[in-house]
Image (tube, rainbow, N blue to C red; front, top):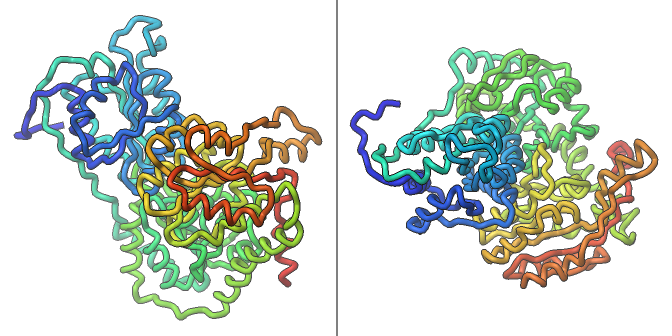
Length: 567
């Protein structure tokens, strides 16, 4: 990298790292101090604009950074020590990679040339770089103090450009502890978003002009590039129904008259199947090539697929698409809108009525059936337990998901009103995302109602960082749908083998658990108690646990049955 006439400064390595964070406008650093990174932590003392959130397990640090990146579009920053400090946070980094969430992960490392069995080391010096290389866009070790500004500048740029995602930067202990070194003053790296080429734009616009019954299939790239407005504008321009990949939930609100919901990898609604089969063109926006949702869409529809695929970091369109271009989703959509601006189609009242009946009506029908059949069951059905939550969700509510049967029911019950109404855990499927995710949401949006829907297993996996929420005065509501089992696995085991193995959970009294930290909570046994619990929770000035007694043996909903009941 050419330095030219850039200003130089003599400083220690820790100060150089913190200078980079300040220059990038970093608000929060999520981490846990350790001996290999104390130089950076000492320099943070002199940076009052940066608030460090000290977690109790590094998994929570990367989970918080992931949620921060999804909610803001800015990189969440993780700072951890060498060895287990770094590997503890690997799970959240992998989840951020799958979710296309920007994240900068900075770890310590053993000194260069360290002997075998050095503290926090393994036999191979490049162990952490190689481990993180598989779940990041870039993984690198800084070998000289003077390289810190250039490497971190590039790391922040890579994390936010193209398909957003995490990067990993390790700094060996001896590099951090070196004497003050002359180095370049930090300068941000700017990577211009990739535009559609004239040829690609012409090809896409040409196919769109020819089609009569288009369907838009939107992926997480719309969420990660904050392109929901552009997606809605394209849908209205073409009067095209919009289907979302499961990790794109909220990219188009459920309340939009052209929204037909999320494509579930385990099945689709009758309306989704019908619209895909009838389409003469599928317009893919913000999906990756080769995903499971792509396999599903190509199986559902015989129509040609064209579109703007996600990112500009070596990603390629799905090879099955007839016209495919890789570009920044927000920029590419704006180009496409300009090119197709003369294609405004009239409102199709029949289509919108069909969507209202087949999507919104089906959601209502499912909830009606569940309340009718299981409204008084004890322990409660997941859907019945969550029904009251829908009444509290408005434009200023953030609901975070977690892994399990509760997650499926959250998607049925909670109607998304904007991009942040529901922040899903993602297809990496890391249990325990909900608690750290809700803490990050409260940091970013302290004025909003923040609620996590989780299970007893997921909560226990993250519970050490309940203390973190209390320590920093964060007050999300945590709904634990408590079935005392790894309930989703129970269903799988019983369905396949007719018996279960190692799925029982003997959890604590979660309300007593919360109160032992100085927080609060409420035990809920019946559906009518949920309203009081939610009112108390959202009024609380500390984190509030709702321990809802649920039954994992209640059946899931049957879309075909519900659709038939609607006639």
